Image 1 (cartoon, protein in one colour):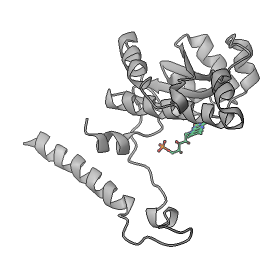
Image 2: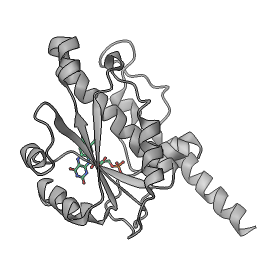
Image 3: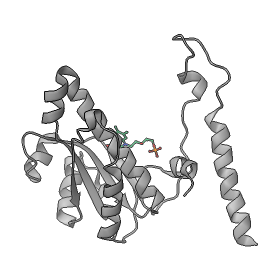
Image 4: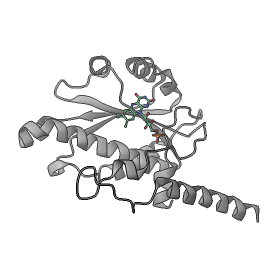
Amino acid sequence: MQFKKVFLGRRSIRKYKDKKIPLSVIGEILDLARFSPSAGNLQNWKFLVVTDVNKKNSIAESCFQQYWMTSAPVIIIICNDYSDVKKHYGKLGQMFSIQNCANIAFAIELIAYDLGLSSSWVGAFDNEALHRDFDIPENMDPEIILTLGYADEVKKPSNRNDLKYITFFEKWGEKFAQVPSHLDQFKEFTNIKKHIKKLKKK
Ligand SMILES: Cc1cc2nc3c(=O)[nH]c(=O)nc-3n(C[C@H](O)[C@H](O)[C@H](O)COP(=O)(O)O)c2cc1C
């Protein structure tokens, strides 16, 4: 898929079809995602891939009753194996280890979308409950949870703050008027969709 289409098309999906994801596809996603950048190339991520119905229920419970998660055929708990990062980077280590996990989480979302799957990031969970229920070692943290599956809802590209409100030029507060609006990209994306529809009709 064209990169821009993948980037703008990805949405957080919270309703999934009752359709299994082949293990080979999950493998392909994670295999690619591990090429995400990390501080010092320390790659402090570990994946816990969960498909069992009871375990998915227990995760949803630990995510403060986000039961929509159970419709996803796969839930991935990305664990932060922070020891080495903290050893290498001292005070910065904690922040780097989280940034590294965030990198790979978003990579997984984009790669999955490129392969026809959808996902949602879940950051609200009870850390201790996940440690306990999944025997996650004490020296690492569940950092990010991703649901993965075939979307059973359709979403347009989501809205974002305009670039002119979030971008300063050279100096804090100095507006950079020339930056293109995300709305232009949105238009381009919807035009692509219309164009594809037209082509299909022909
Ligand atoms: C750090 C983080 C935590 C999030 N936690 C949750 C969550 O607990 N539950 C949920 O449904 N979505 C969660 N999301 C998804 C956001 O709600 C979503 O990314 C945002 O609304 C933008 O929508 P989009 O992903 O469709 O573009 C989280 C996203 C991030 C980056």
